[in-house]
Image (tube, rainbow over all chains, first blue to last red; front, side, top):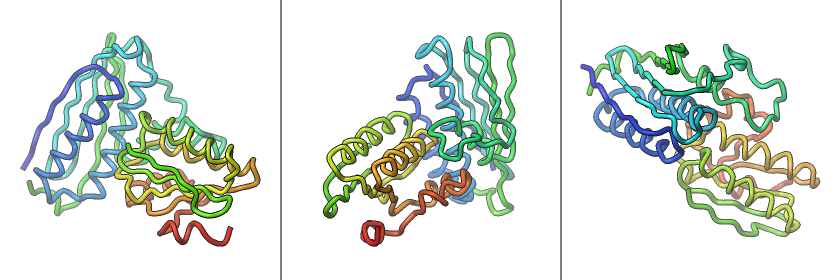
Length: 142
Length: 111
């Protein structure tokens, strides 16, 4: 069983709560999806979206479209932004900030660590993030 | 996010949070910790039992508070973290320096 969700708007701090609400809807409509997997997926989605809010340009005016699909074997999201800025991927893949007590710079790294797949691509003026979290064999309900 | 600060014991401040600790709310937490330390309470306990979700910005505020507390010869401890917060701490290896305690009572003793 699958479910598809979509939302769009401007990448501003208030949109973080809307994404949380969307993921809460997924949680309610697919109660059999593994909670740990969904929690890790939600953390990654919020980190990537937070990166767009913080670094996207022009700041506060970056339009986004978020699509999420629940499949029997995975959660998959695509975040597409109309963004003049290209993200700094220097913390990917798999590298933490060099200072263990750094106060920032962990967002993309953390998102990558939470997911089974994180891909970024640039197409025209758009940044496209693909996020995948694999589910166990018991996660096909909903 | 809701936040409350008070004195837990002599020289020990308590910050109690509820809601989501993210890029929106992290600056307020950082300011609250700074205020406690500035007021002579360099030992700070942050009660996370009401926090449903924490992102890297929230984590950054805790790390900033820890460094500030240590500079003032104190420390910062966290209590009551849920599974999401613990996962963020573990994956970033910051559970080694922000060693989570189960309860505020446990965090507030034996400095």
